[in-house]
Image (tube, rainbow, N blue to C red; front, top):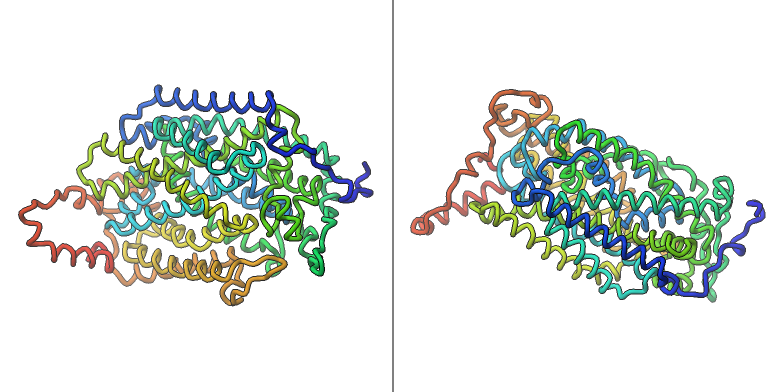
Length: 609
């Protein structure tokens, strides 16, 4: 069909069968069953073929991984089901700009391999909070960052993946939401608990292959259906819903018309939904936090057998990050073309009918494309792709969260714990995390799907920049000390939380119902706010550090960039703390008041005072 004569009235129509009816056929079910069998087989193979009896074996895969599973696991850990649902949904709503988030990672995953990981390896650490403890001394930064990271995992990463995965499972299988999530979490928890990081990385590698093959096939079908790239560009700009009124209510034209800059990544710095200065500078701050300091990502690199494999794995991941623009964002835009009335709905009653929420149905763009467009068998493959992305992301988070808890929190409670006890504690914590995740499902389910990804991006913009500032200065400015880092983190956190609480108290609003949040607070784009918060955090860290005592070089050898090649023996700032034995019971009462006072002084004034 000539693209110039296309109109939304000629878009693809849904099959009379409900989505979950169409996926209940022998070919689809066979593919899904084979997928689960193969994944469990790989997990069991990793469980019996790798050393899981030590902390290094369980949490870092024995530091024996070669480059290609490291790169595949980096990619799979980053690409959850939230990417398939969220990137495609944003593409359907606003065009290709969100793909810039993926391409920005090309730079920072290389910075991770060439700059940050060498320092982490020379420091001899397992977790990121552990690095800060060695770099600055004391416990308060390590414990603060561990708890904050665990909260971020639960309330953003896990909740987003569960929610977006549930959208697809509901559409494709018609399973009860809680039953589907319970089964998925049970399986992911099983091979994470039993196999450790090696099982996670090997299954990530398999799931990366499944994701790429399945999404490539779907992209091919989608572009064939729409008539090629030129037709795609023309038809997207004309993909307008026909139902724009409901009684006396009429939707404003700008709320359902594709943006004029839909095919531009760099958009107006004032009126753009993703302004180009924010995309370049603000996003780079968030990418620094995520790619260079996040436990889930860095832990994959620490499992590599040497630095050559780390760098090669990072390069492989960087190349694969080119793909989401074409495999997720553009298929979402094509879904709007083919199923305009459903995906681009704007009238609340219409949206409620199609996807159960009144704020819009762009989040069902990718699932709709799968269940409507793919033939039998391939539809099952694509469900496997969604399951693969969901499970690989969740297993990565479960393993890294248990590492944080075990190494940074549990060891502070049980200083003399044996390796066997640490293994048990790490595995039990995964069970606790699964329980919390299931309990969080009702809150995720009740969230407005149209605002979920704005929520996640806002959370990272409000909480990530101070962490990025601390790690950047910890490595590149040896003058920075514990007091500066701590107060930079705390004040930055308070500023970010103030903006976050205010914004969510007023609501983020929508095109039809703008938020009442004061412009001076919420009028600053979240990527611009990330830049402001980062600069404030850097200034606080430097000023406080300059007015307090510096850390002698003897404590910093191989912990910062200027001293990375030092051969001298380092005296760790936390060395004395590790040697402290538990106070005998008979002397505990005598010194308890003094010890409590000392601990309060350390938390408020710094470990060196």
